[in-house]
Amino acid sequence: MNEILTHPSRIKVPYTWSAGEALSRFFKALRDEQKILGSRCLKCRKVYVPPKKTCGTCFVECSEWLEVGPSGTLVSFSQASYPSPAHRVLKPLFGLIRLEGSDTSFLHMLGETNLQSLKIGVKVLPVFAEKRTGSILDIAYFKVVS
Amino acid sequence: MEPVAIIGVGQTAFSPNRKDQTYADLVYEATAAALSDARLSIANIDNIVTASNDFFDGRTISSMAIGDACGAAFGGGKSISTVEGDGTFAAFYGLSRILSGNYDTTLVVAHSKSSEGDLRLLTNAFFDPLTERLLGLDWVSAAALQARVFLREKNIGNIECGNVIVKNRANGAKNPKAHLRKPLSIDEALRSPLLASPLKETDVCPSSDGAAAIILASKSFAQKKSERPIWVRGVGVCADAPLGERNLAESKALRLAAHQAYQMAGIDNPTAQIDLVELSEQFSYQELLWLEELNYRNLSRVNLSGGCLSAHAWIVSGLVRMIEASLQLRGQASNQISNAKRAVAHGQYGLCGQSHSVWVLEN
Image (cartoon, rainbow over all chains, first blue to last red; front, side):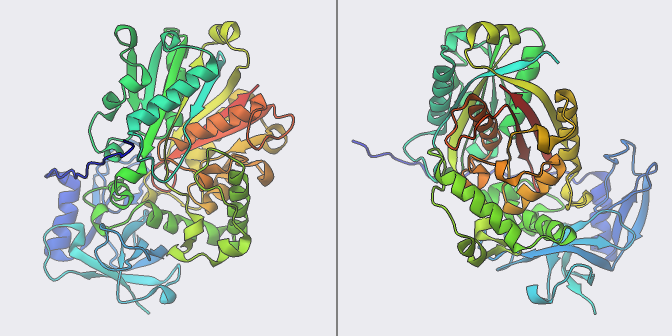
């Protein structure tokens, strides 16, 4: 009588999110020119990458655009040793990257390296995907440059 | 601020899988416990604020799924509203409702069952779907990025984090509600395998099933009806920018929330003036980081209940901090210290602690 039943299920709802003006411009630059763009707040001059339409600190528009990087500095990194359905590769390496000319840290994956070779402060460069579709994955990963 | 009182507290036991109960059943259990603790009936509750996350529950408007379990339909219906986030943010809303003058009592109840969804996917969904989610990060790998920055900038090693784990797990072993009730030695903490470098398995809190409830009351109601009210003397709530825009070695949001709460309560020397702190540390390093921003130096008076490293239900754990702090101030805690007069309870939500709330409570 004490048997408790469970009901396995899943939610599968397709979404088609608008990238909006700012991210569309950012993704198109990745796809068509292999360039990384940022937007600058006209008040505090902070450069956001990925670009934002409004500066959260100043509550004004970030209407100035500029190219940043491509090289950047590793601010932090980690390797997830556990499996996850969200991971794209086994034991992915994640990095927080401060691209040259940017005032924010950019989240992405790291490749062509291993945990032991990584250090805060190393220089990294983006490796672009061969097939680019206008998404964050148009950058395949960042690699360490010596 | 006119003081508002906590006049009833209730929590379920926390465990990896409460398969025997639905999340609504857990809400009922916590609500009934809080009412019984306050010696009130559901008829005495003027309004309800719940805390939940629709993604965690796997349905939208999940608060409606717990309406019956928290008395929302009682007597023809009560005003009920939901906060998506930590239970302490729901408590802040509940407190504001009392201060509006329209309500004498607010029931605040929070629930979650991590066992029913996939936490890796659910917390991956915390990230921006266009710029971040596809990369595959979740709450643990994001925290690992924060841990590396914080530990390096403050020159903190494995031993200090290990000591936090050992302390909290020893306290948790005395807490009958805790999820992890076995003490951990420093060797076990240090030898634990890497989960997301530099975080080891034992650096990460468990994800539990459970619910918690508190009953807030206006000053006049509490003075008339409660034998042992715990008074809210100060509160501060603050949200920070997304993690890529912050210096992860610090928490400006927590510093500001603490400043607001301390100022309201007249605290200028936290370590000397606060008897104990109940902290929402999802990871061992976070206890050290949050304490820096709270400017509290007495580590042995932190998380006497075992903290989140011993029991942690998403959404619920901040409310549990308020409950455990209240129990200390009432002299009824499982790991009771003598002469506790003033406590701080802390709640946080979001990746790498994006939002914080700080409560100064007194008996």
